[in-house]
Amino acid sequence: MTSSRSVFLSEPPRDSDARVKVPSRPEDLNDLQVGDIVQSWEPWFVWNDQCESFDTWNGWRRIGDPLADDALQALFPSSPATSIKGIDLLESLQAKVVDGKSDAIRTFLDVISAPPPDGIKATSSEIALAQAFFAANAVPITLSLLYFSLGGGFASSRISRILRSTSYLVPSNGEAEFTTDAGKERTVMRLLETLQFVIDIMGGSLPPSLTDPTTSDKSEIDFSRWKGPTCLSPGTGEGWKSTVRVRLLHAVARRRVHQQSSQTPTDPRNANPHLSLKFAPSIDGVALNQEDMAYTLSSFAFGPLHCLPKLGFHFTRAEADATIALWRHVGFYLGMEPSILEKHFKDWESAERFGAMCGQMLFLELRETLEAASDAGVEPPPAPTIAMINALGTYVDARRAPEERFVLSRYLLGERASDLLKLPPMPRMAYAKLRVSLATATLPTVFGRVYTAVLPPLGKRWESKRGELVLEAVGRMTRYKLGMRRTTFRARGADGELDEKVKEEEKVEKSKEDVRRFLRRWNAIWWEMGGVLVIWFGIAGIIGWKVFY
Image (cartoon, rainbow, N blue to C red; front, side, top):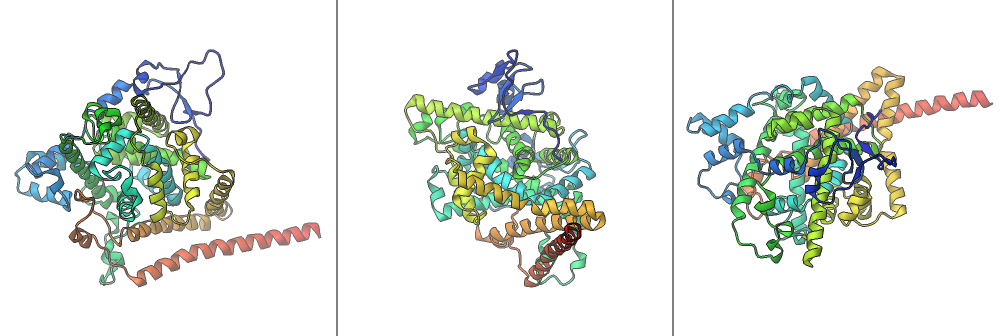
């Protein structure tokens, strides 16, 4: 059963005493009071003492990650940010501190090598439950991240400016690069690297040596680094390493953005900060700041849990709280302010309310941009959502027709948000096909629930094996789509490309025998499901025959 919702309202109350407020710009959040009924991106929620004013958001916008920035500065004191590419930054910092030449590097490594403080740290049982929940729902969670979190995140032109300045997801020349195959591929490669990061912290990555045909003794592989709660152990866990590498990658991007912001803009829209195509310090603050990181962490933690019921999947309150605890734990190593994590990622209820606030801020910023463009009589900066969804479909979700991708995104985001993002309308027939496909996708989950209820030992074993194999399948797919690579999150060049030497270092060998072993295990769980269903329907038929005849 899905945990009860205490935050969202489908519509504002009709009670004459209800204080219904509809903010039209971010600054209006300063005037809201406890008890006001306000609108997020689509649903409504009650403003309480946990909600943040615009002044608080604006303060977060001025805070970056000084710990990581100082360590990067110590490692590359005079290098231009664009020259920091193709380097495993974590290994470089660890090697540098051995020389004892930098207090900034030692301080950074000391902090990330320690457990998170109480109130932020997730317990081993919480991490294990969150990882098992992710494994059982890896496919719908991935769809939620792609079509809800990613699509909605691009509502903010401010975030698009930062990503455009780094050429990380949004091409530096606006939307045009999305129309080329090479541009689409570069963008999707970065998104797949983000998906690998998620899989790493969820204990779903395979040791490269496991699939390497040259590895003779696979019994010596240390799976504790890759699987279970220990994958987040500081210093050794592969999920921990990926998290720290992503944090250092953000530090490189932050340095690049601030070095580029001094360059003279060429687009006339850059005269107005709200319409700028490039990073605008006057309203953007620090690049990749605490506000940006809060949005990102909320999109990973809150986004899928919000979407799963709409996709036909359910969760318990314990699973939701464990998921939030895991992301709170990871957020500490990503460099987020502890006060934000403790307050807004305390549990599912607090994270859900914070997700409502994040959605509210993102779409207020979008409305502000659209109004500024209208007042200036110019076209607003291009929102890359539509082109991004097309690129995703081409390389990740190719089985889904283009029309169905937009229908899925509109279904998850809601009508109001989708209209602001200019997503195509939802044809009735396409919507009907979507609901049928979503219902079909839940069949294994429903079967597992019934199987467990009827035959607990067998059902639990089948559910565990299914989750393990689905997670492994997503990890294998990600690695395959990356070109048989396992990324170590190294900064790319200014052109968005990785050096061939880096690709070679990250290459993972493919073993045909390993693939055959996986397929045998994969087919076995579906044959078991089919066999059980045949037996059940056979018994039901016999009982029906005896009753009626």
